Length: 322
Image 1 (cartoon, rainbow, N blue to C red):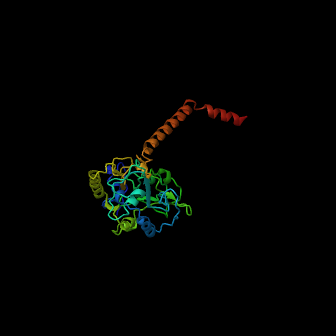
Image 2: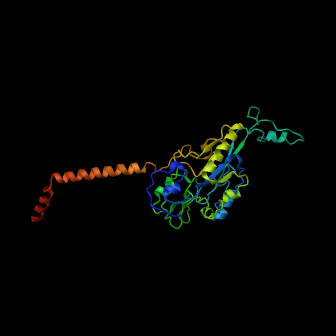
Image 3: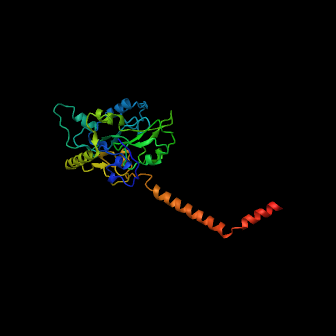
């Protein structure tokens, strides 16, 4: 793909950051739609990601709080499957020890709804979600990188060039999602590349390829957004009013995400910020104000010297003669 130098003023309502970056004849923007309502927590995506991208093993240390053994995204965890346990009924699912006992007998029928705690039951549901870099339309990590290690690809994704990264770490606090991270042993920054090498040859990312339930769906972003709208309407019609889309809106604080989600609860439950905003959005205005202040200061200093043109010089000469 050819690149030309352009002045970036907008991202076409969040739909085509590759063209705004300067790619001519860019292909459709590609991304992920993760439907958490069908995630079974198998972690096949985590394994496939590590195997294909040679991501180092980061341990299988259980925290005692959850079956989630990675707890979050990091330099060595580019895909993270969250396990969230909630005290909440889940329809006809077996959610309590009492229901397990009742259903053990031949021909036993499960109750229409799980207990709500009023009869001593303790209903539990698990929310499972595979998290990943969001490949934001307005990516703050790109804005702050001083070496050009972070680049926008022709597919609209954001990639770290590890051979260019100097480990400065500016991108870490810039990310509103806390995705990008530094690898301690080499000091460089790492994150999901949306399998850029696979995209270049027409293959889907390893995590989506390995997902057995199609919870992780890959394709042109516009198609995924339309599919997500249909799925959301289906869930609402099936009596799941709490279902919602996250990162789907091109008008949000990051211009829309290249990897967005269907959630069954508030974003905070999944460890996601409720209203993410690109952290560098105000930088142009801040630099303009700094420039105006600098010009005003320089003008004031020049005015002072202009008002007393010979005073300083005469004093200096007098001192030299004495």
